[in-house]
Length: 188
Image (cartoon, helix red, strand yellow):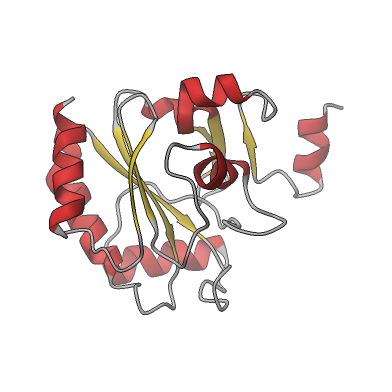
């Protein structure tokens, strides 16, 4: 039995990098596209599938003061997806336990309350000891490092998976600074 199969059997396989985590050159070369994640339905998804798309990666939560940003994220996705934007939602319970639900509860909440159609992933940790490797890359190795301050932090990645802009929780999806950075990324 492979390590991957053993971890999956134990329910421990949530995310894993497709590239060796100890290979900074590979991570720098492929950025976020070098990782895989379980989607909200438990299916493994290689982020490399989004090569050629502009990505907005957001750690989300259902019981947060910023939760209404789901509406803005969905509107942003709908208005720019034909130009190549994909919003990726990563639920996290790291900040005052504001995402307590299961993946199925999160999916139901997002679809019924905010009509979310952008890709949602399974709940992960974005800080601390159990931090997922994608967020370890985003916060420690990307061109714009720094800890995740709260729910709804946003990373904008170009079509090659490189982080080109970063926004805190208070920056709404329709804010001028986010829209300006997104416009630049979409035209490249």
